[in-house]
Length: 174
Ligand SMILES: CC(C)(COP(=O)(O)OP(=O)(O)OC[C@H]1O[C@@H](n2cnc3c(N)ncnc32)[C@H](O)[C@@H]1OP(=O)(O)O)[C@@H](O)C(=O)NCCC(=O)NCCS
Image 1 (cartoon, rainbow, N blue to C red):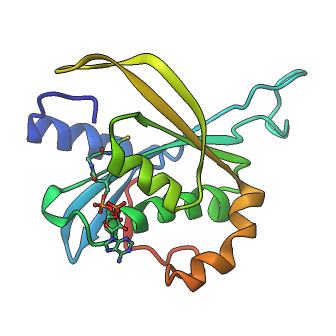
Image 2: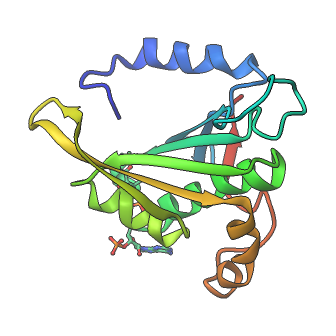
Image 3: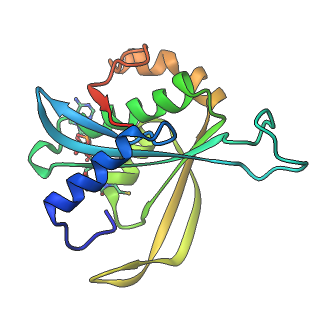
């Protein structure tokens, strides 16, 4: 998303190099064996008081997610499924407390997707992001808590989005 030029081979090498890192939760979306999307999930500490220890509630308790799909498959619900897969990974598999995502305010497909999967707009930042063509632009930050994710399972099931972790077509790379 933040690159203006992508050299496929070096991008592929950099992506694959992360696959052996147990702390890296990058993922790819597959249709059959074809990669049609990439997704990232980076775990971070929350703001917290006290000495940091592995069992501190705020240690490695948050994640930031990101996603990109091949334009040829847009508009079929795959982005929604990819984001739901990332939230399931964060909450159901990793047991995190909170997930955030940021996007350009003008990126309507992205923030509509975040709202569709139950995330809340928490910040509208004024000209905090640089766009190669448009210069300084506004950004949005979205978030969702584990309690909210768990409380909305019924809605996901009635929307036909499945309930079980791993229901998405994602292949985890890291
Ligand atoms: C943002 C992005 C991932 C959305 O992907 P997508 O696969 O088109 O998303 P979806 O198909 O789930 O949703 C797109 C639309 O299709 C609709 N849709 C069609 N079939 C659907 C289905 N079966 N289930 C859910 N939604 C469906 C959605 O309701 C949505 O409608 P809307 O435009 O009114 O909001 C994609 O546009 C993208 O990769 N953009 C470039 C990268 C990018 O901006 N990444 C985010 C960086 S912050």
